[in-house]
Amino acid sequence: MKKTFTLFFAIIMAFFGAINTYALDRAHQLKIYNWADYIDESLIKEFEQWYEEQTGEPVQIIYETFDINENMLTKIEVGHADYDAVCPSEYIIERMLRNGDLQKIQKDFGNTPNWLGNVSPFAEAKFQEMAPDSNTLVKDYTVGYMWGTTGFLFNPKYVSREQLMSWGAILNPEFENRIYMKDAFRDIYSVIVLYAFRDEIEAGKVTRDELTKVITQERIDSVEAILKAAKNNIAGWEVDFGKEKMTKGEAWLNLSWSGDAAWAISEALEAEEPVVLDYVVPQEGTNVWFDGWVIPIYAKNPKAASYFINFMCKPENAIRNMEEIGYVSVIGTPEILDAMQDPDQYMEPIDVTYLFGNIEGASEAYLNPVMYPDKSIIDRAALMHDSVEQTEAMLEMWNRVKGSNLSMFWICVILVAFLAVAVVVFASMISKRNALARRKLHKQ
Image 1 (cartoon, rainbow, N blue to C red):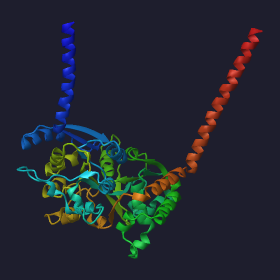
Image 2 (image 1 turned 90 degrees about the vertical axis):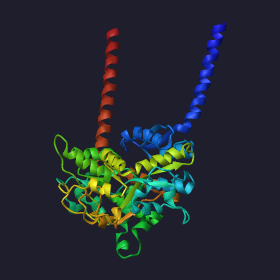
Image 3 (image 1 turned 180 degrees about the vertical axis):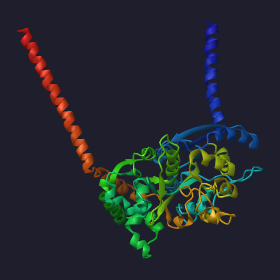
Image 4 (image 1 turned 45 degrees about the horizontal axis):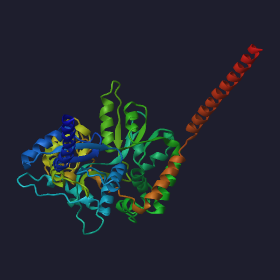
């Protein structure tokens, strides 16, 4: 009995000891919340070793992923999740700044190099547009990670570049049931509104930045009317499968993010049966989107989080991330420019001084034009913003647009499917009734 009691006591003490150890260990844990497939995962272990070398403190990364910005934000704002470093999109960063959800990033790294200054001034200027007031310096709270544009990913076998030089291409009757549209109401609104008010832009009555930032009911209605007019052309609403269909040659046209387009173009060429794809940004303009690192208000290890964000800004790490995930880093240093140039593959020079400044070769760089658009395109680009009090109106518009998007083709498909099910059910009922009649006759 005494031995049993001693064993029981030891188990209890070990249990509470484990709880106490966990509580102590949280100070040496770094909880990261990022998009899936959005980092070179070998950097995670390397950071743990590097951090201990720099600070003398051990750290263990707990790495989790999310697939929807709003789900991530709910876990933090409602669930008070204690993630230390999170990578939201620009409109969520804007909302978190406005709601006071963020801590300042620590920038005193002692003898460790500070790589935060490698972020391109272009990205910092765009991030500053997220400021909730004139007193907030946004770079105190967030550091850019990846960025890109929105445009048309297309198959030149069926669609020419000239046909896509306007967002009005979604209205072209030649594309009936051929367009896969992103199921992302902010992204779609932010580019279609530029088409809806193209004449006002041209006349200097409104800027692209004003159109994407100041969301009014008039502008929502204009976008809704255009999208509804395009309903017969929309083959489906997608977040990820559109690019897959494009790589297999099963689709003509996909309203796409540049990062997905770059991946699809490369993937399609490497397929067993290669497919040639291309990407274009229409003349009316586009939205530039960004993802960036932040430290939420409930973070428990802001020091390690700050070191991690700094580590991500080291040029060689930025290059590794780009090579792994296919998106474009906001880092604008000579190392990045040199690493990404390929004069043998990209024959037309591109002006990327907006990102790399006065670095030698930036005015005529031989880069992937999908990943690094020319300055002439960026001059026509605006940042996507949070819809704030218009979010409900935007969602209602989106639901109406998607709900009305049953083209005659799909209506016929649904009717045929319904009739087929009805015939099967009816036939089954008749069969059962006949079988029952036969059993009754047999009993007699």
